[in-house]
Every structure is written in C-alpha cells, then in structure tokens.
Image (cartoon, rainbow, N blue to C red; front, side, top):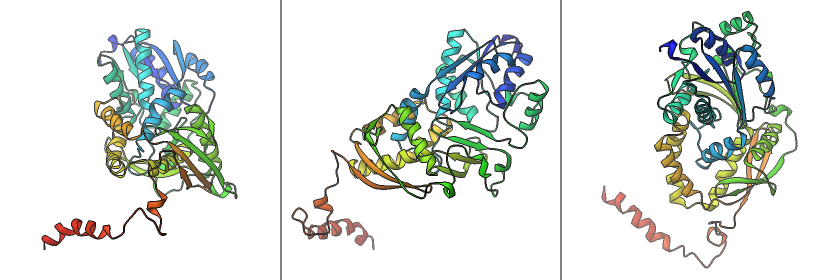
Length: 397
C-alpha cells in the first residue's frame, strides 16, 4: 500500500492493548491523522476515559457511540431467532459484534472524509475477516490497514513492552496476557495459559458469572415471554432488548449459568481454545427453543434445524451482510411469526432447566398427547400408517 496516499484513518478502538498501540504505530508509520471509534456494546465499563486516553495517545478525535439497543435488536435477536450456535457450542458473542462495529466505522469514515479504516485484529484470527468483509461490502473503495499484518511485533508481550516504553496505559500484563472481548452478549478469553487446552482456566479470570461452588443453594425461577420469536418480558415486566439482556446476564451470572470452554475451528484453519461467559444468551437460547417446541410446525422446525449450522457458519466467518445470510434470515423470520408464548425456567448451580411453557397459539393438544382415554385419536389408524411407511423397506429385500 502506498503510504503517501493514506491521509486519514478511522480506527476501531477499544482502548485495549492492540488498538492503544495501533494509534501510535499508525501515526509513526503512515504519518496520517487517526480518528478513533469506540462502540459501546455494553462492555460493562465506563468508556468516557477512552476519550482522554485516545487523544493523549495521538488520535485527533474520538467517536464514542452507544449502540447497545441496535446491537441487541438488529444483530443478537435475529441470530437468536435462528438458534445460531457454532460447532454446537459457541453462541457467537464476538462474531456478531464485528459487523455492527464495522458498519458504523464506515459511516464515520464517510462523515469525516477518511480514505482508510483500520482494526486491531491479528492476522491469525477471525476478526480480521469479519471486519474487512463488512468494510468491502459497505464501501468497496475504502482502503484497509491491519497493523498486526504489517508491524514488527511478534507477540502480545512485545506490544506490552512497546506500550510501556511509550507511556501508553494498558490493562494487559505479562501475568495476565489474555485477549478479551466483552459486550452485552458475552465475554471471551484467549491467550496466556489458555493456549494449553489441558490447563483449567484460572478461577479469578471470570467476570460475568459466579463459579457453581459459590452460586446460591436455592434455585431461581424466572419466566420469559416471547413475541414472534423475540423475548419481550421477564416475569411479565416488559423491557427494551438491551435492558432485557442485561437483566438476564445478572440473573444468569449469579447462578453460574453460561460458561463454555471449547476448542474451535477458526476460519483461517487454526484450532483455537476459547473460554466464554454468556449467561443471558444461554438462558435465551434455552427459552427460545422451549417456546418453539409448542408453537412451531414439525416440518418447519426440522427444516430450520438443518439451516442452523450454515447460518452459524456465516456469522462466525463474517458474512453478516452477505446475500445468503439475508436470504436465510428471511426464511427463518417467516418461521418465527407464530413463536409467541411464555417459558418458565429453573436456574441452579450453572444449569438452566425448562420447567414450563405455554402459548396462546400452542400446537400442543393434551387431548391428543394423553395416555389416558380419549375420543379424538383412533389408535388402530396407526397400523396402516406403519405398513405404508414400511412398504419400501419390505420390497427392497
């Protein structure tokens, strides 16, 4: 890339180690103006200090935008309606945040007349793909800088040394060199001792949930109400999407719900060990499936189930704004029109149990399901049904 053509860069800025160093590095190596952009996605920390820190580090300006409601309503909830889980375990908390950040980054670049955008993702990970696919989709002409693919630093410890040398304040230390990402949906941890898949994560690493040993000895019961596939209330109290998820994070975290320790397959081909806390998201996934179980037609449900791995893959790989994800979303949302009802859950020592479900549009009919005497189902009819379904099996012999 011709460095002389880079005049103004909008950097996706978290205030963490990588992006704090990136401001200084971009100015040194490209002699360009750097505008920082921090998205408030519910990190659970005060973002106001980032303004002073970014400007002190060399940014000419910083945007801090509260995107929590948009994040939950337009990104998390559509993904939840699809029951998206990557490789059967990961609820995609980091994956789903990147297209939203990149979208607003492109909008700021347009507003500021910036010719370039940048991010702090490494050249080994998934986030570089998620950011850049979104950049290229929303502005095919934008220039992109990925410092991790260019600078001479080979490790996070070298970044820490550089930050200390240039008096850049960072929270990462050589004792706790974790790469973390937190938002309203989850927090992730990678790196450090976690790079050994045999090592148990340190007890003091977790931040959103209590260990099961310290969770209450008495179970907690909650009710979640859904309308057209979206959660709208907790215990009959209506809440905005972001407030609802925040409340479930508190309830789930207190009861030790939502911890995951997995080795996943990154898009670039590397296996990576990640540890996640997703208390509210775990509760919502469990509840959503429960209300679907009594309101969704069997064949629609089975067809939707077959789409989940592909949908989850598209989110994980960074194709949120792709035509195929949007097409799948339309099909999934069509399946959600009837997903209305209330689910009762029991939370206890890290577990989330469904103990009740009801709906005004329920397809569950007790008079059909009962083992007691009924007048609506003739059991003799099953004999012909079985014989017809066995016909092809019999004639192949």
